[in-house]
Image 1 (cartoon, helix red, strand yellow):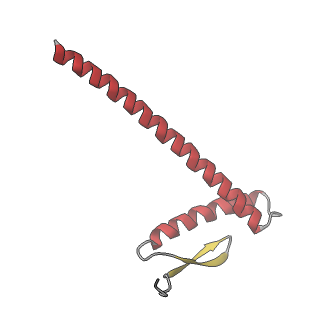
Image 2 (cartoon, rainbow, N blue to C red):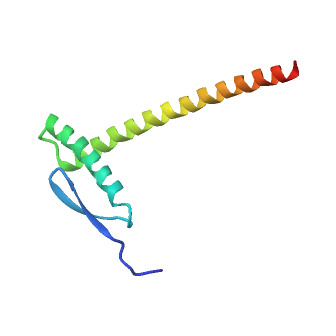
Image 3 (cartoon, rainbow, N blue to C red):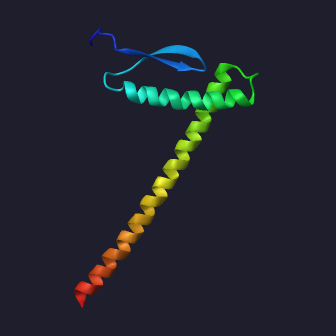
Length: 99
């Protein structure tokens, strides 16, 4: 096992800096994720400035997880619709081949 350190990158959440390990070439994705999380945390913080950072982070994580699960559900529903349409098309083509 290598003792080499993974590269790190600084991100900012709620005005506080964090050093995060980040694979080479993944910096832009980490920046994008950090900006998204920071916006979510800023929105929650703006609604109630009495919450602690940990609670804000948990609420943001729950909200983002909800968004992800909704998007996955929509994706799966779209795939199911495409599969049904494909099946109908295949049956229609099979009928025309038989004639």
